Length: 130
Image 1 (cartoon, rainbow, N blue to C red):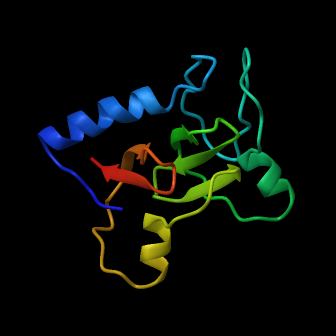
Image 2 (tube, rainbow, N blue to C red):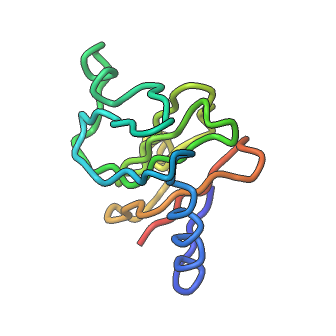
């Protein structure tokens, strides 16, 4: 996980925009958690922030930045502006900005995650701030 600034951000944002398209080609917009993932066409629902919240998981009340599908299409990561990452289906959690903050890593308190992209293998992901 790392942050890219300047021109690198534009390149990663372009990759992230291509990545947040589900196999059906339907892009998901931003919403405030707890949020329900809406599916269209052949897209499959693997879980939502609202179901986590209903089960008692604390979900921050910040905007969803990205939904990044796994290479198989059998899962996705939901990324929030505060850097929280939630894994559904076959997506595996690999870390988050919010976990770094909780561990005491010194980060700019105004850092906002604006884009995310998965690695080609799907074994990790990049989060970038504004």
